[in-house]
Image (cartoon, rainbow over all chains, first blue to last red; front, side, top):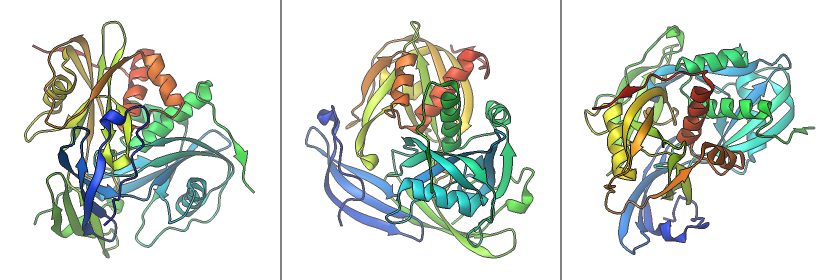
Length: 201
Length: 201
């Protein structure tokens, strides 16, 4: 079994890097691909790393012309509650982040966007998962039909940014990608973190 | 096997809730506890949910008297790179979030804090993990000895908030809990999201 984690990017810190020695797949379910690798630490000793291989995901911050944001309410079984989230989903095989964002926004909310921007990326569970979440922005939205998966129950809400922020201040927004999306949105609006917008065909 | 996910909190949305039917542990490693549950959807049909049971964690935003922040640089094998993060760690059995924050801050950085505040909580991987991250703030810091685990390689950096923010704007801060900590820090400083500080003995 080859490794499931990406090849290390040593950057400026080769003295911190752990390298793959051998690995096995210890569980393969319908959703989760779980690996256990033996790695060499910088001092040459060995350690075990257990982690999930994930295809990556995209979260979309969808902005209506009147300034409201399109958010979702969905029951999340692993945390046992209904959570407020920006639309998001996993990359299909070979799919580019922007394509994925367009597809997930349409499938989950019905909205298509005329303009897109790609902000940064996010590691949400770097201790035990390879997941990278790409943060995309969408505006010039027009409504349309949703295409939910069987058994997918997603309610939509259209919230003003101030209301989403107030909910976050009360501790009612707990989803990490949604809070980071909100941070990025506010930084963009303030002029601190610019976005490159482009028009999609 | 009982379920690993928390009992559902239906809140105002009982029509979205999925309920436990039966479950099994499909992998138990040194780190990961992986479950597969059958759940009943609101319409009565069944579906499968695969997820990791996690004890919960704490991330600490440590603020020095001169305003600089204590951050860590650590190689994260699942994502293949060195990542800039606020100090964090998992709850021990029976440990309260604040205790955990004090312990992790001391073990990983050597700092003890005179004042603490608990902000909100974070779900970082709600599609496939029960993990909840509590966000704590620490100030009135005094340096001391670290107590790293064997094989734990963590470098410390003392960064001004403006420098951490500039790194985030360049896409160099990718860790979700660290970005949310930065958001909360800036909201607190602006007066928008107040914190209740208290002094520890």
